[in-house]
Image (cartoon, rainbow, N blue to C red; front, side, top):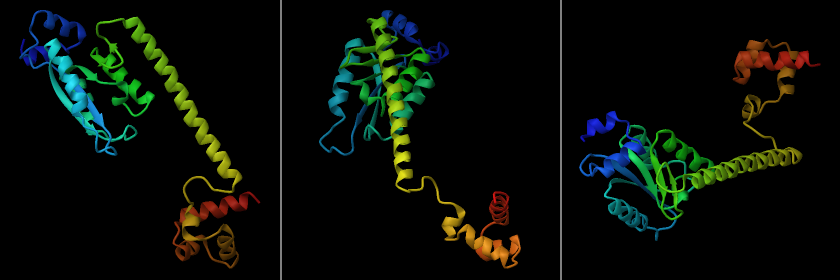
Length: 231
């Protein structure tokens, strides 16, 4: 089967296994994405430690593979090779993705689940070797679906926890008199509303005040008009 036939089939797990059983995979251009990530903070880390086992797994199955390596911390959203791999998967250039452990795939539980959902929705397979997790592949799929459900619950808890921490932080800042958010136009210019009112009381027009302060006419008008209306 040539590359064009493979792409026309929109390769999914079922077609992949059919080809494997017929010994049609080798030389077909169908590949498995091997993803490895190491942290830039630890110079002793080497992606080869992950890749050796990933390659061995594929060779034992008779699969061809393509390697993707990122040098980034787990929290770093900028992972060019992960993005490239997911794009190749989207373009049907990969039949599945294999990692050593789940934490290689994403920077948080939510992010891991997001990537797994993309893989699953495309009908491709995913394997995390060390944890024995497989999606759309052989093994106890009921157990793996249960694990994904647990991970989803953890992700929801993670999101709620972050949200609560943010709310608590904002509340604490308010009590301490710390203003949250970007500085207003007046704050950036070092001008108060009282300063604008004084200029107005001295007979300056809105446009003249705008010229004097370097603030847009519409902003001056809005601020002073709202102040007068709220008296």
